[in-house]
Image (tube, rainbow, N blue to C red):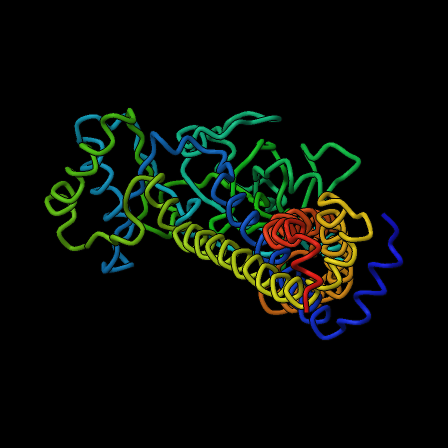
Length: 398
């Protein structure tokens, strides 16, 4: 079928065409960005933490005299280690989905070669092993790793992704890096993965640093418990009684106490809700767009019944009429995709500015184009089939 007659007909129905084009453009812009956000939220729900979540729980104490922290930790450790089913208890400062200290690190003291924001975790000598972190280079912490070196350099373990940012063309093991406060660190191990406490959908979600410290150097009353997955719930039920008995001068921080898997679900609750809400919005938008195309196309067909009858009288088959309206709709969607693509990137720029989202990839526009073309073809199918079924005598009758 020739395209020129289709464009000629569209020029005679400029208002109706403009309405459908505008609807397609808005649908494209919203669909692209909503789909992009939903994919990002779902990707966050599946993100790997790098620790053995199913076997770990966290216990955090609060409302105690900080001057008695060492005594609090000692008594709490004694009580937690006596709980049936608990195999390991470690003192930690910060954990994924709970909390962590953040700072920027660099490969030179002045930070002239770039600074990278990372999360710092601290724990006793065996905490890294209890977490189940996979080491790619180096060995698990030993007693000598708990103290700074002669030149006041702290030994640290960093993630593979952070190591690649700091030394993209070199091995990180044995290298030195500096914190924003001038503190110097020496890399003694590279971890495959250890997610940041508050991960986001970007390349920096695994920029983490772990430092082993002596028990007396800890500044928190936070404990990492390890047990068999099927015994973890029972062990947690005994924690409150054990802490009330051993540490009556402190209280449990319920917001930072529980199974790591539950803390993860709690942290990602808003991501899950956002994904569900936007998915529903996209379905509603597609439904409204389809209804709009059906309504406008039905009205358009009704206005051109006589034209259709003349074409049928001149020898056009039902298939010709059907293909005509399908081609027409295809071109209208194509016209709508041009301003729709521009609107999609304008919306994305606003999201980048206010919500720090990454740039919208081009293939989302291609996906939106395919979806809207298919939707348009399905929406126009009913009115087009009714138009093709009109007998020439009825259509041309005054």
